[in-house]
Length: 477
Image (cartoon, helix red, strand yellow):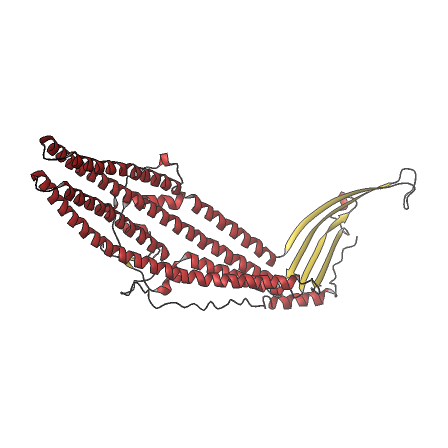
């Protein structure tokens, strides 16, 4: 075949259209709907001076527990859920790369060898043996769709926003996992506190039982008094195994969060008394929109949906495709790259949808519906975030007050029990008074341990509600 080096005049309009299209690429804008957010000026439950800017620090260090810090740092690197979220980011990035490929030309290399035989009786055949032919072909094929309406670019933008959303989703998973770790760790510390209280109370009740037995032995006590105190001792003994069970189960749960078998995890604990209670400066409510990864993820998903609407709208307009092919073709390998073996072809095509049975309109309406759904989801995530902070602030404030009042109750109960035990030794008080005072003390101490645990867990919930951190004021509460 003869190679052609002359420009084809028929291609000039197509090239001009291509240049014009490149100049006007992306003429359909991406319109993001107005979320119409109503951001309050301050948190209702915290009317003091607001804190500073958002602080993405290791918020768990505010509790000043070296063991908690060690656990949280291990969770950040070894937790399975966080690891899976990282791979989802990898998938989203790859999807964005796939979407961006449509903005670039495609180029393929091809090669073919064709062997054919024509019989003697066939047209073109001669002689008795027929004719064997061999055709060799190598070439390059190129194609490019002009993004006149910005369809491909909008698809890339949608994929990029989805990739960004996956990153915020990873942060959300990490925040939730770290909060679960802290909550479980504090639950274990609280159980250790209650176990220590139960054992101390068991020792006190056993000491009273010994006094009653001494009184029964000398005739100043009754068997009923002894039976009543033995019941108290038995109840305290029965309260110990469930607390041991909870401690062991919490350690197993922490092992899963750490990505390790429970046998590979060593956790000492020691009680909530070793943990500081940080004071809070929650900052301005508007800062919450930048702190919370779930809000940022919802915003990115909304932006992706808006870009998808642009893609669906662009489907109604013509698409322009440029294709080209060039290479060498010959019947003999020795002449494949010789003069006269080269060939090329260029083509431009345009496709305008005319009748699709409502498919394009359905795709557009579906994209708009998805955008509307994600808009409402985004607005709900914002309102829910403010509600989460308010609930956590209320819990922290009220539990601090409850802990102070419960501590007073414990102190009063302890004094009453000490007096009753001393008078029991002196023989000037009846067993009913002793039973009442020791029961009141035991219940008050256990309630105080549970309130302190609830306060620690409320602080963790506040950290989580604020997106993982705030400016921590110096000192302890």
